[in-house]
Image 1 (tube, rainbow, N blue to C red):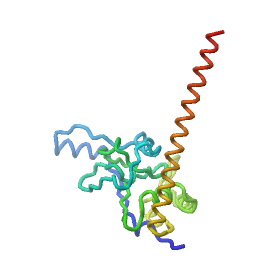
Image 2 (cartoon, one colour; image 1 turned 180 degrees about the horizontal axis):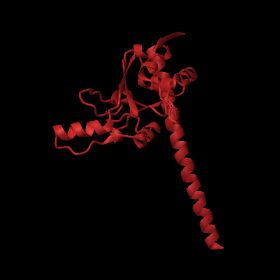
Image 3 (tube, rainbow, N blue to C red; image 1 turned 90 degrees about the vertical axis):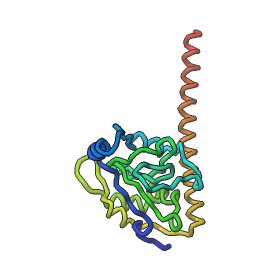
Image 4 (cartoon, helix red, strand yellow; image 1 turned 90 degrees about the horizontal axis):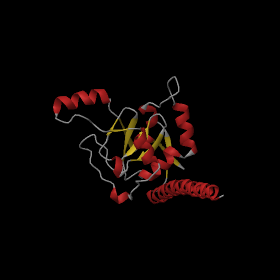
Length: 195
């Protein structure tokens, strides 16, 4: 199996400091607030509620606002997700890193599988964690040094599609489980009232 470093396919773009960005925006425009991509945005996207097909991704690198289909890494969780339509337009804060990749060589969904689930990559990420306290992070340079397996593009697409479909199914099953629990509880409560 052929392996290469992530930095051969990927560019990591760190989020911006919200305090500095807010001051700069106030000086340059009439806009008073910036909507930032935060942990709740990441959680929504990580649940893959807004995943689109590859053909629907918008690519516009002119400004710092996120686009649907952009890949974002949570620096604290060391997980990656795709930005949904719901969170498009938000600006990335320091807690996140945007990933731009060469899509001729590396499929987005395959990257998500490797970064989030592939055991060897998870092991490499754990070894590169730095910092003190409860939140450890991986420096961007170290992220780029992670070795990933490279398979033909058609296989990347297949594996990535299976990974994303599995996550969607997990999310739907979780939602179904919650609804079943609510339904059962309501039936039981009605039974108590009927006694």
